[in-house]
Length: 149
Image (cartoon, rainbow, N blue to C red):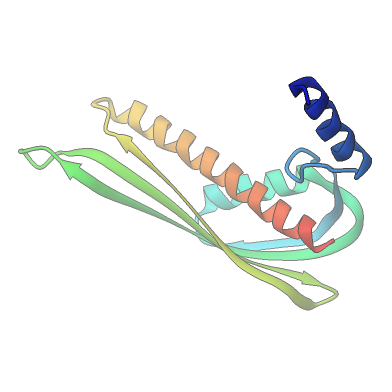
């Protein structure tokens, strides 16, 4: 068989079985009636904002999550100044439906980065990393709930 015919056959089978990648379809048919949290204020606000803006639907859930940020020095120079850092963001979350817990999970994301001499620039860079990690965690939360439906 020619390669073209095989490719056409695969596409036909995938379309006919209504195959749809789960991460491609971002239509979440649920919403959060209450989101409560503890821990790192900045991380919590980023996650809450993304969760609220991404959902709208008939199924209603309540969410509680607890976040923790750990910043470690991985490598120092001979003077003892930090050269490489690691930020770890840990979020434990529980999903409730009608007051009953239906899901409990944990999401851990981390990033390693080099130090920058300018402290303001380093702080801005760390904030960007935290924003990115928090967005990834909120996406993971959304997809874990989507699988429940």
